[in-house]
Image (cartoon, rainbow, N blue to C red; front, side):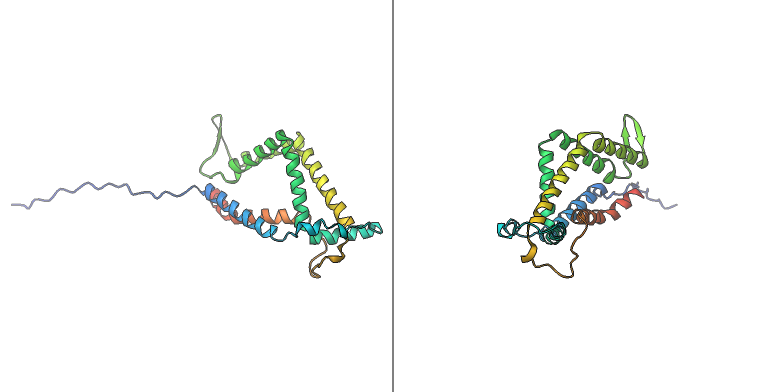
Length: 216
């Protein structure tokens, strides 16, 4: 008499799938965190505002070369303060022109949402058409050129920066830098956008590996 074989129990072949947060969100959070740290470190180097506005240090420069030398020394010492003045001038110009501000914010968020932090496994689909990364980049570049050069945004930004630059040069030329303690090893003049460029580049560097993994 043959032994009875027990019936095999059905085994489900499905395995639990680990859910991971979207890479784009992680990259965006890393970008904001690194940008915040870079800005904090840069702003910690600003000089006291009463020292910037001390009336007893203002005098007329003797010549054009003396004014140029003063600007270089004052910029080397008050670099962060001067860039904050230019930033505030640009911010007020945009606030008093809300249409230009909305266009600029729309351009910024278009780059962030549609290209920089968009997951690679989620193609851009508009009106039923799928756009590749190259096509998306081309559209964003054309949109950027249109917003900056064919609207009032570009002229507003340039005029605000020129106004802030004029204020900085006027202050630097008329403030005598005799009471400033400059580091001899520090260059007298650095790149005018080194502060902003350094903060942004450091922030982007933190997210490049993550974004690169999403594009593979």
